[in-house]
Length: 280
Image (tube, rainbow, N blue to C red; front, top):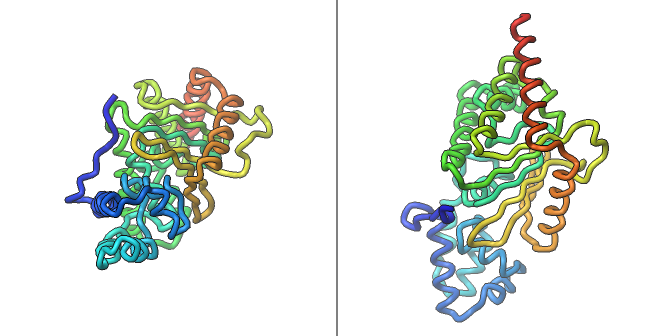
């Protein structure tokens, strides 16, 4: 299996800051835990900053300059990290996603962004921002499709998605868009690029009824959990908390249909949408 994606410090501000943070920490003779203590963050968090998995915030940069006698280096260079094509609540998660070697996601309402087609994504953003000009919608769609390019690698990351049956039944963008969107998922699974399961309505109550969940694992950093909400998101790195959400995901998988049965259901629903489109 290919190794983790390498960030080039010369072209990525995040990688530059991470490499410099590791260099200065080691030169100061501090462990990751010792450096994290004045900032009230864990050693794991420091490791994620050093590996480029997490984004350095300005208040952290100022503190690193102070603790490591960096003469303003981190504060000066941290500003570049604020530039992102993603909403503030998701920017750090998107950056971590691009570094992950394994992504597991439970989607309660929408097809996950990494698997959305252009027509589906456009319909989603038009619903989110009904008065936005086409230029804004176009930029959002382009960013979402570019994000999905991490799946161009044939093996990394491993993507395992559990779709709630509501994802299949909620018609987003009309029957044509839904037909194409669901068949795209089927094609990705048939190509063995992703693992997909459906959590059917008949499963009843389940462990993740509170909302969407994404788990990300890395070869060179501790795992992360991302909780998705309406215009908000929370990226979690506490080991105990992440383990709890890993159990949540496992319980959802246990209640879901098998991959084969899931693909059969997705294809069946896609056929229903196709027939509906033909009746128009």
